Length: 466
Image (tube, rainbow, N blue to C red; front, side):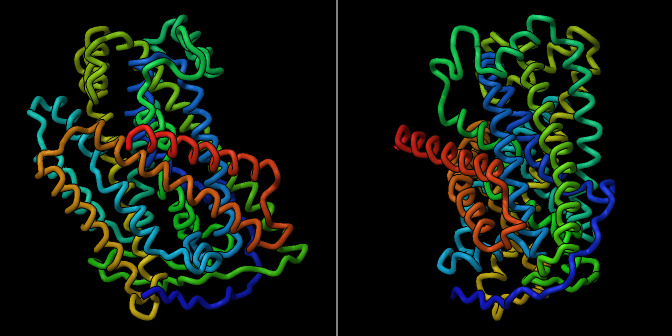
């Protein structure tokens, strides 16, 4: 079955770097993927129950993901092919079956859309149930069927949600947070909580690991950054095509194998300019915006519902936040907060399914290009998209509708996946790329530290719960 039969990389000159404004896009998708899981659910949930002394881990988690994502982008920038193709070249026995399974199984649990359905139901005054989640899942499939280029559809949806939602969160947080709340946030950044350092007694380690894994995107979704860098035309990715909508009859030539360049002085100079600019793009959109959003959402949860017994129960802390906002301002603002939270959660599940379908379809082709043709990649994308949707529908129909439990199950599985591929990615870049293009010791340190951290927490959590 496993017959990648990959051809060697072609050679062309590195194209001149694009202006920074033309590079903005891929990081919006991966930021949007994280907004509804770690940012909007898990870290605020922990802050509302245990205070802000744990917020240091949110910043550390998204910092790990920044450096890991940039190593994923590095490979695609230089080779014009996805990280999955590169890993297959390097690890012949490391089958793409692993990436299909480790993408589908952790993310098949529709916790994020369940949370979206919960808060949207509350804002609309209707009873939450699995049927609401099923309707939202079908809506995701319908939106993907309307766009022409899949990447552009995701980028537009996430930009719209983030550009409206994030400023709203900041404004509400600045209104509610008092001087003592800001002081607790500052202490929390160095790990000093109310009566503890780093971790409070009684914190559920599975939930903490889930939040740490979702401080950003999480799981194989970070690897999808390679696919979006390729489709955006970063560096040598300009020689690849786009995944288009099979329902609109638009076709582009998509290549599996990439194109690289000789390490001449001109090509290396161009690479360094590309590298500097895509680092800025990812640092501003993903790292800084993502970290600030997590801090503000956690601060808002702490300022409004910390110590409230109702915050202990799953996604109810978001509903309690909206209630406090409505009581202390105007009722409409509380409802609007719920609606925006629901839309942001919906946007996260939307991008999760799109990214997953892109990952799984690419790995299906890598598995056996002779059987699964590259020109049928758009069809495979939609097959995997709807498989995920039907899996989510089946879980809802079975009566499993508790949002937080679904999110934690997926997140712990994703942390294990991150432990495995973080080590593989850094080894790939240190052995397959030319010396002038390899990561610095500083970047190696952060990725290796992430590898150890994800591994240690995953192992500890498994031992505790098996």
